[in-house]
Amino acid sequence: MLGMFQWERDIFVGVISLRIPRNNPCLSAEAQAAVAGLGMLGYAVAKPYWHQGYASESAQRMVAFAFEALRLTRLQASVLRGNRASQRLLERLNFRVTEAGVAEEPLYGGPARLADRYTLVRGGNATA
Image (cartoon, rainbow, N blue to C red; front, side, top):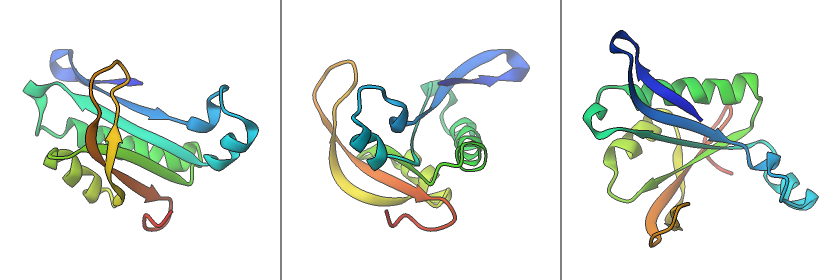
C-alpha cells in the first residue's frame, strides 16, 4: 500500500494498493497457480480530495508498474454499486466489468455490499 500526497502542501490525500494473491502463503499450490499473474488494485481518496485526479494518476501509475515491472497478466478491481467516479476511472483505463453484483464483505466487518468486479488484461481486453 502506498500513500497519495499533495506534494506542494505535504498533505496525505489517500492510498493505493496492489495485492498479489499468488503471494499469499495460506493458499495451496493449486490455488496459487489459479491466481498466477493476477493483481488486485485498490484505492481510496479522502473526500475533500475527490475529483482532483489523485486516484486517476495513482491508478495509471500502478497499472503500468503491475504490467511492466511485475509482468502481471491481469488486474482486477471491485467498485461498489453507485460509485460512478470509480467506475469511470476504471473504464478510462480500459478495465471492463467481468462480474456484476458481487457481494463485497468489508475486511474489518460490517454487512456485505454489492459491487461490480472489473478486469484489465495486459495487452488486450478484459476477457479472463
